Length: 217
Image 1 (cartoon, rainbow, N blue to C red):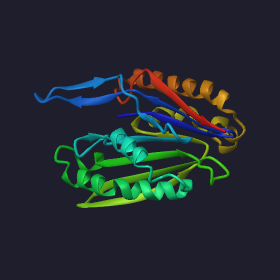
Image 2 (cartoon, helix red, strand yellow):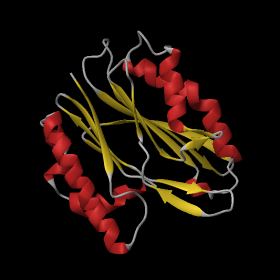
Image 3 (cartoon, rainbow, N blue to C red):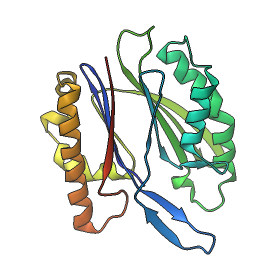
């Protein structure tokens, strides 16, 4: 239930995220709410975190964990790689418990991803790293991935597959050459292409509106 586009550019990272959460009420009614911010930006460092997949963990929304982590200050004086590792440890028990105890979702929908973007004073360049937990055959599996170029997260990414096929904008070097100012214009154009494709087939995976956040040198 999301579409998040992230660009690793020559002078930073730009993120364009939709605003939809699907909410199930106590009476069983399901509604889409399109007023949610899906990007958590640190106040005290050039770091961004966002989530895809299951967004409520042990009755708390994903960004509450991000806020707790920032306020803990345990990330201070660490490199980006060390922060990624520490953030995984910070989340792991809660995420595993949520995926094991989720009673309403089929296995293919039991997945939680957190994407960390940024750098610290110990790092020479900006980086993007994804932490991804999934539940299959009674077990929780974890994997981490490094990303470059244009990163597409969430169910809505399928709406860009045909457009980006054999396009220059699907190449890593295309985004390496791009500035943050250019990315702030380019990502909304790609987002709108995905919206148009979604509307054609009546999909509901993400909102028409978006937020843009960025970090730069």
